[in-house]
Length: 259
Image (cartoon, rainbow, N blue to C red; front, side, top):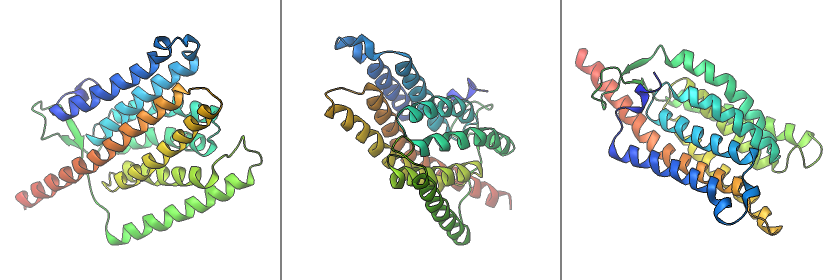
């Protein structure tokens, strides 16, 4: 199943996937080139695993491929640990929730798979996409706000900078991610609007971590890897929305043909 999901890619998709994988490997070996071999340790390895599995996860999600959940399990475990080390506690809690959603999402998607019309191989499948209505949009927005303010109150209640360094920003990223994950599990294409917002916020968070390291005359290669990973996610989210909108359109056209 996992190997089959790597088939049926366009030229752009092959280049996108390859370039960002190479960038992650470059950041991983960069400390060796600049004479800072100590920069590659267990945390560096976890950064590499989180970045590569993360790119593969969101790339497969944009294509509607079921293997997104396999790579998702690897990514949430490693990224959750790295977020804990960086004191982004909202991110840590989010990864725990995401881990549960990987199994739920797989169970839901596996029942709604169809042949990928963009692939020549018959065994390459993508998930059926659908869209939010005005009513479900309203429910989604209200739910997001409730989760957001609830998380901010929780993060403020936790004492000490160790637990919550950026409660308002961290809470926004977590709330948007939870709702985005729910929409993804339920196969709504509007999930990508939430992921775009999450990606921008995450780039800001890790950019701040990189800036803080620079102020102490150090270079955080892990922060660089995370910034590149979230940049890849941002580009992929825009592309993912386009893909899922086309997917839904093909589904509607197919239904109209059979009516």
